[in-house]
Length: 236
Ligand code: FPP
Image 1 (tube, helix red, strand yellow):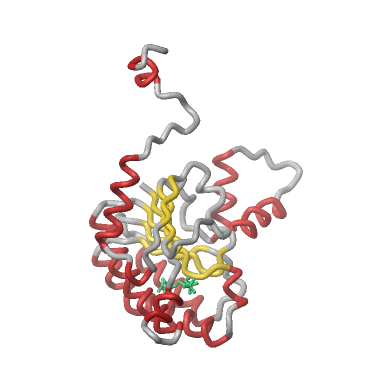
Image 2 (cartoon, rainbow, N blue to C red):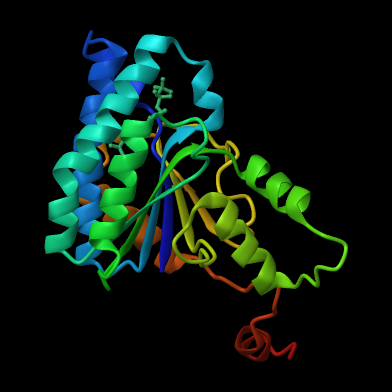
């Protein structure tokens, strides 16, 4: 199962506690640790977290700097935790605008966990699905013979994804907004969407279970008709 999460609401969480926004992001990073471990325990195969969208560069410089300091700290402290739990870490998104020290941390975390066979943890940093899709198109040559699986391989290349991404099964967005915000637009074609008011720093193992319970109740038809239902209503 592939779960993707838009971790929204750090700023509002901080405001409610009368703290600076950066404190909200720090609490958000703690929630990341808890949710990653909970997802791995539930044998989720891929977890993709939206940590920094390409649009987030427009935020005040102090907030952006604070967020990148958190990403570096995360890679520093959590790579060994990932190894212990056999979690394979991969940062997806653009790399041309990241600092050399963050880039080298990313590369060393990815190298260290490359052989891990458990959950795939993908952290999206400077990520924009529209940019990725456009970039695949830009790199096409007239002789390219594209089909879905080759397209997904190209997308993985552009995104610096270690492996082509499986389709998203469940997309969770915290913080009450109901939009995709340029996240995994191709991969979410048939995702079940789950929007919850809970602010990201408050999202925990129990909240994840509630999302998974709701997902279990969804009827995923992928455009098909459920023939057993037709038969049971006598219209089959
Ligand atoms: C959106 O909330 C959240 C972000 C732009 C940053 C997400 C970052 C983290 C959860 C922490 C660091 C992550 C890792 C992987 C270590 P917002 O600030 O837009 O919230 P608001 O809508 O309440 O203002």
